[in-house]
Image (cartoon, rainbow, N blue to C red; front, side):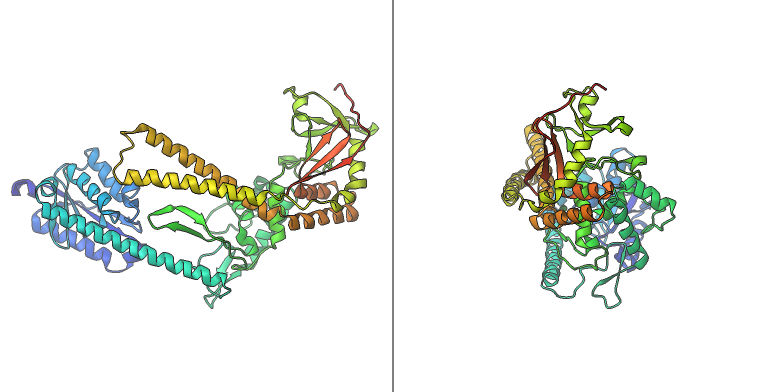
Length: 520
């Protein structure tokens, strides 16, 4: 480029910090000042708006994927920034701290777009000609990228080691806090070692669980909090269903921290570590949390505007057809005369099942008279659950290994565009991994929530409820849904088949084998 052409060229400053705190120091002023001085010295027109990635890491390439650097590249591609312009950076590691191969490839792409990259700390220029014809400059750029990547990798390993050390010390019983950040119903204590409950917010959390255990849905809970003017946690203006759901499913509510870890190079792939019980002060007890998890796994018998009405069917949300496994609902021909039945909902809608009606006046008395004996026979649980978890973990390990091999091949130069089947296989493996992770999470939750010991305690509570509140169908149904996943109304045998959530089933007879057909 001639001096005349250079005098009319435009320059753009690119500033990046890995943490927002760096902006408070001298780094921002220094980078800005260096860009202004260089432009004045070389007769460049410095654009008044710099491209800034503040608090964005270049180690994982986030500035290139979604930051201001990406916006710069798009502007060049679309002609908003002209070829022959200058990109002023303090040093090459501001552009990228990825592997030397990826970083040098990014530098080459920028230069191929007709942009000259200037490193302000040493005044070096990198353009197409420099990279093609000056091997020393190219090698020096690669070495700079290698050093920057190694520095970031070392820092990431050290930071990860510090976090692992903290987790081990906490697991060993030491009073230590991982960070000052905790759930929004807690605040750090003055001693810097733990957290304490914010009283008014703790009361809100307990209220949310109380409403959920009463069978009120998340949408209704959210509306109630907003109607009552309950202050929102954080900076939001209103309560949202998603946050209510987050509270109801957060182990921190009963004091347990589930820390996550990730590979330094793949920060987005987080993996849950062993939970640390007692890390937070508990705002509810664990049994309350697990009661909700159990209820969540069953179908609520009442929804929407009906959620507050008295329950008339003691098996609401549980009664199941033996033919199609569909829900059986309450049907009333003449309630005053006792003409009330349970019938398959699918058959009622003409959706394919055979219509069979079962007299409700036989079902409820049988349950009340025999349920205490059924509770005494509560099975120990699903002995195969541990084997299932181990099998899923093994499958997941194999899938993650295959995924890692493909990604490594791509990083080493394999172009998915040249081999379409590679891209398809990658997508299939990622979907399979996501599915297995979901299955594993469900099994682990089931192992915790539906263990034999927990099931026995819930069954005991059900028995106590029947004895102390015999007329409260709503309360009895709520406890039944904690214990059972479904109750099959086997009108062919005259049995009620109770399927325990932790595994196993128990039968009790409600009448001699027979069934009635009713024309509605």
